[in-house]
Length: 284
Ligand SMILES: Cc1ncc(COP(=O)(O)O)c(C=O)c1O
Image (cartoon, rainbow, N blue to C red; front, side, top):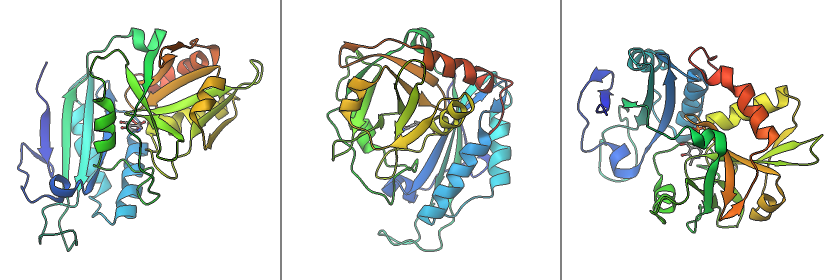
């Protein structure tokens, strides 16, 4: 597998200051962008989330045109790649939390597309419930910020790999997401199914694929909502699936050992997304 390639502030290789606030405090944001046919997928949505995040955190936002050109440039030579964009507040001008007039840092890192069993998207994934819970903090909720310790703990609770992903609850006991995915539940009668996903007002990431699925479900005639959900709602769901910008949709085939059918609504949405996720897919 080829090594990741890195551009720092637009320069191939480049160098990163050991005083960077991204390193010291996780003072930054990131985007993980799937690239197919040499093009970054949903680049418009990724850059929009990034700029909204920069505004919320008072981060110096790099010029979007420069970022966009750098990401496209990184994606262009390869048929499939993952491009990670990281934006931090940059090298600290003083010690401590107070920020000054720092010049932000931005990194573009191109990774090979991971090797993955294609059966996961067809037959579904096994999911467990993580013991690690998510803290609630509306000031950070929805952001893809560089503090991921909760996800790291949850992911590494069980290294047996018997589960493909872990579902996470908030400290109040609400269902929030997977460690690296958003979660959707299908409920209602088969002739009038409804889709719901946990709101991300207290914690969780406002995923790009979550946004696309909410939009496409409505276009498909399936009512879709963001709401407060609990683990018990998983018991009442006829289908459950996970999303992220790389995987698209992963049906869930078991939760904590309880089998679930990979059902027709998940399949319909996977089919609906297929043209958007392929190399010729739309941006946005
Ligand atoms: C904690 C968490 N939630 C949700 C997502 C899904 O977000 P996206 O659809 O933007 O990939 C991710 C992706 O890595 C994540 O890490």
